[in-house]
Image (cartoon, rainbow, N blue to C red; front, side):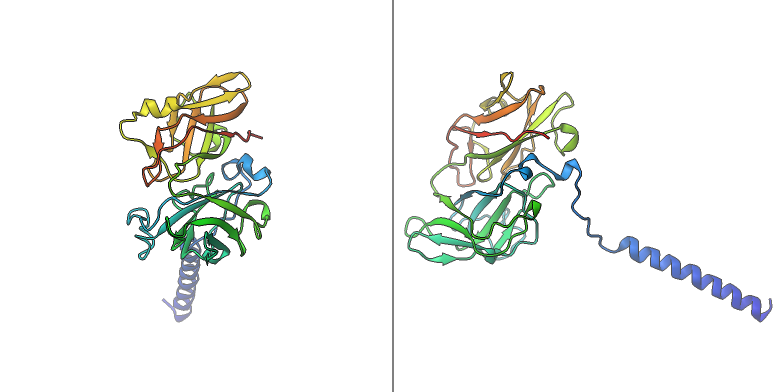
Length: 282
């Protein structure tokens, strides 16, 4: 083999290797997926005016290690889910939130995240973690937006505020929207014709001795064709504040309700009888 042939072979090999390395670097590098305008990313709530819906004083110096697994210093701190009418984007600056206590003290949370409710159809809830006031001496009474927060539709919640639900109160329904089963991740059964996503002020789980059927039958959905009960429930995860009501009707949904005393928050406070308007599908 001549020197010229060797040089040509080496050059060809190098070009091929370089191309392969470049391809692998591009393929393996972390990719930022832009927010899609597809149905999985959108909810009917994104068409509504931005508002702070609720702030729920869920735990006072009692955040569990399991709930706070991502933050080494979070166990034993306060937990306060804050719900917005539109989805919130990560990362979140915790200093954008100011918690005002009864004495007038102004506190910032140490951490703020949409987890565990961070699915594509979720993210309406920001969990605030830190020292946020104490019950009964100086509980939190108001949450104010004093910094920037990225929300769907490029709206700005700066300057908004919402009263805090007291520690002893149980969780209530605060948001709901309808979705086509083909456009949302859910474990509803195949015969489901539409899903009502309900959002609670804080994470919920069944009360002791409440059976899965008690849980399901506690819900009722008022539709344009009359009241119905879900044929099944989906997205049932302890500590999550989203549940799916699986319906076998396409009748326009109007309101979702739940009987009192069936679910409880992480502090074991039972829910009151509660209902909420349902935002419809496009």
